[in-house]
Image (cartoon, rainbow, N blue to C red; front, side, top):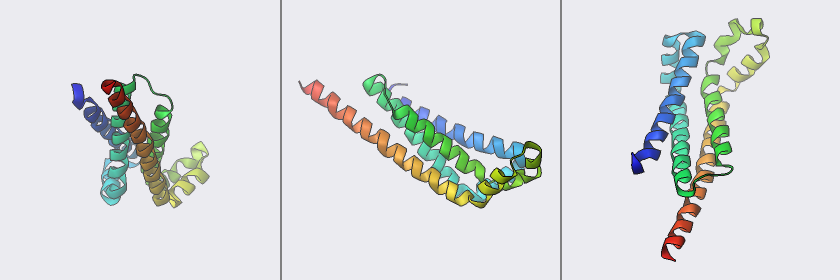
Length: 150
């Protein structure tokens, strides 16, 4: 797979995040609802998944450059979790029917009320993660170029 590996892994990560979104929405409210939500919020969902995929691709590339990284995995995990939570929040108000059984009515109401804000937070985390890992990749690339020149 070689040089294409980070791109392939990033694309698979984005697809996995979209699949998790669709699966969770489908389990909560049915596949028809999941498709409706995807059509309604695609302009948030697709960039969230793509941003997560870019972060994973950059992380794979960075690991290849320096062997093992410190800290970047935490950023990817936090951003991925935020992206998933933001995407799932768009259906949270439909969980209100079962929430009393599990004692989460307040959480569901909160998530449903602020679903668009969750999308924006997820996008902000994506951008921050891309900037952080991208900076690490640039620094590692410069270090490798200096070592090769010496």
